[in-house]
Length: 222
Image 1 (tube, one colour):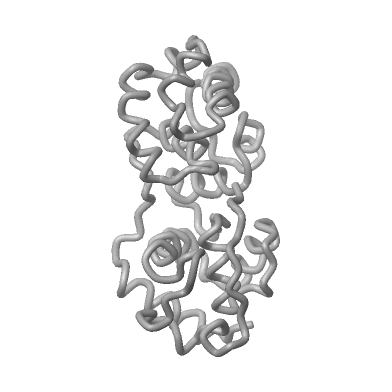
Image 2 (image 1 turned 90 degrees about the horizontal axis):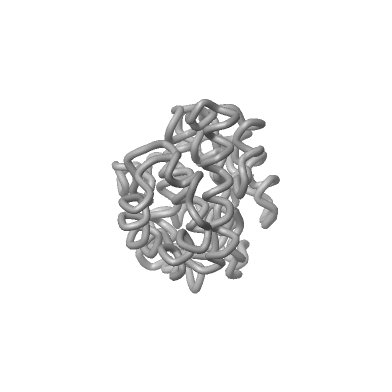
């Protein structure tokens, strides 16, 4: 595992490369982010961002989503994959937000996990991006892969364990931004297909570069 100074150095290097640590998904309302994350399961953020503008124009309110026919919703999100399950989750989630939470996205983990289609990854992202909670860790595929390569975790692919291990070493005020930066870094440099170590600013702290890590594609985890 890394020393505190090594962890801080990795954080600072990623800050320099990606000063704007923003979520890649585009949204205007809190529940739109919640829905966009659900659509991103087994799908790219780029594809989701192409789908959601028309979807949110057709269903501009939670009420319209809650009353929607899942089959019609599915027509708008078909290209995201697994559209039948996702469309049902969006409609049912909208209905629950209205009936149980007064039309507001809740901020507590237990409440978020009650919502259809919401797991810890989604709940952490909402807590970090919508509510600004410190200490959240979004253990997506990039986070799991890169944290293992760097040696920030013990190499586990279990998102719950990755979340616990990163929470233990990341400063609370940095963790959410750190995870967003890992997404950008994972698309540009430390990809699932291969790690482009020749252009990596983190080599001096990276176990994989030092010949100790494993370069294995990681399955999508929500």
